[in-house]
Amino acid sequence: MPTKKYIFVTGGVASSLGKGIISASLAKLLQARGFSVTIQKLDPYINVDPGTLNPYEHGECYVTNDGAETDLDLGHYERFINLPTTQDNNITTGSVYQSVINKERKGDYLGKTVQVIPHITDEIKRRIKVLGTKHNFDFIITEIGGTVGDIESQPYLEAIRQLKWELGSENAIVIHLTLVPFLGASGELKTKPTQHSVKLLLENGIQPDILVMRTEKPLNTDIRKKVALFCNVDISSVIESIDASTIYEVPLMMKKERLDVITLKKLRMPEGKEADLAHWKKFVDKVKNPLKKTRIALVGKYVELPDSYISISESIVHAGAVNDCKVSVTNIHSENINESNVEQLLGDFSGIIVAPGFGSRGVEGKIAAVRFARQNNIPFFGICLGLQCAVIEFARSVLKMTGANSREMDRRTPYPVIDLMEEQKGVIDKGGTMRLGAYDCTIDEKSRVYEIYKKKNIRERHRHRYEFNNQYLDEYEKAGMKASGMNPETGLVEIMEIPDHKWFIGVQFHPEYQSTVLKPHPLFVDFIKSVLTIKKEDN
Image 1 (cartoon, rainbow, N blue to C red):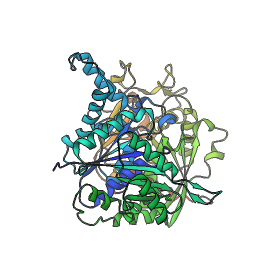
Image 2 (cartoon, rainbow, N blue to C red; image 1 turned 90 degrees about the horizontal axis):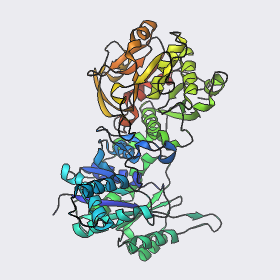
Image 3 (cartoon, one colour; image 1 turned 120 degrees about the horizontal axis):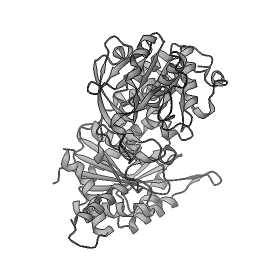
Image 4 (spheres, helix red, strand yellow; image 1 turned 120 degrees about the vertical axis):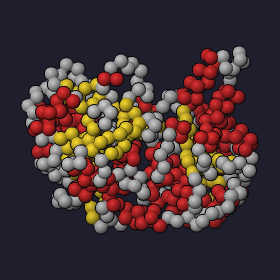
């Protein structure tokens, strides 16, 4: 019997039903039973990775420790199972075709005609199994992006059809997530979309083993029986996934529906120990029943799409739970902020986060937000471009460097306090060429961030091309802005803080990428703790 068990998660009827959350929830349940689990995402777009995609197109680009720019679902995976993912956990159509074409150019196919079947599907299967060969996991859960019926998803469906046949039904199963819409006019839940979705899956040669049905109303026994009959699955394998107030309830709901038990039975695996979700339940209870509340502003360039800053949003949820607090976040578009209206827009908030981003659009609004937070002693947290805006604002307002800027925004600035990293100056290609992944940072022991981290050496994930220009560092520190964290090898500034401020910290890295339910990030936790000391009306 193979040591690896494969679980494929497909979707139908509509996108954004939550395949990633269902995958992560099942992984959490199996992990809680003592099994080792990982999750990977197959993305059908032709981009090699989401690194060059506008956040409006695909939401946040998530970065792993090994420097891979990946789909945002990998963030959900890590937040749920508290384990790092890698490049191998995200596969795109672009990377698959790029690999196959490179092999063809080198003559690896010995002159044969290169086709979708078997060459593309073989490459997909190879990448699915890479996780199993590199690491000793009991279960590999693979989420297929998009929905059944999409042209882009066809090679992936064919690949998992082949894999399921090759591995055998006891080693590979398919979980299909569908929507059961409620029609208010008739007061009925309709199963026909699910039936059609499963029919499409069957046309691809795949019989689902388990059906997970997203619904806003409870599924009664008659509906489950009907779906089981028409979709050729056991009634015990028809799982209800009702709308939840928070994504973190889903593992508890799936445990109640016995999704983990049914999965283990299908794969002929022992149930192991009972899934202990006591810590998880405690966390969910804190999220749903906070003792305190506060309001913060998230100033960003892509706020129209909440997924653009999903890791920051979830990090705030984690930190809020630690502080027994409900944190209401208001997204404010930085293009709408200027010196004349900044107090009107930000004056009612107890804390301000200036979010990451690229390019000059909306940057002056971010700088105005930084100035308002600094001058009014409001807790401020700058992330990546947020740090850079804080540096620019300090140069202009405190150091009196008129026209100070980043060379990204103004190549002719007289004071390039933020400059292109030396190793980036010859880079032409944009994909995968930034400073990416985890890097070491040494923290000054006489700093606020040292009190927060409670250790001198940390390692955080990065995604940027521009850095603080060290030739100005002495002037900053003499004026009261301190470099409290630096890369030990390059001397690049990683953290800036103002010690005399209530809470003013900017980081060049992305702490949100490492915050999980079990290990909330200390910077977010301390930021919310500081925010709670600021009393505003209606908080």
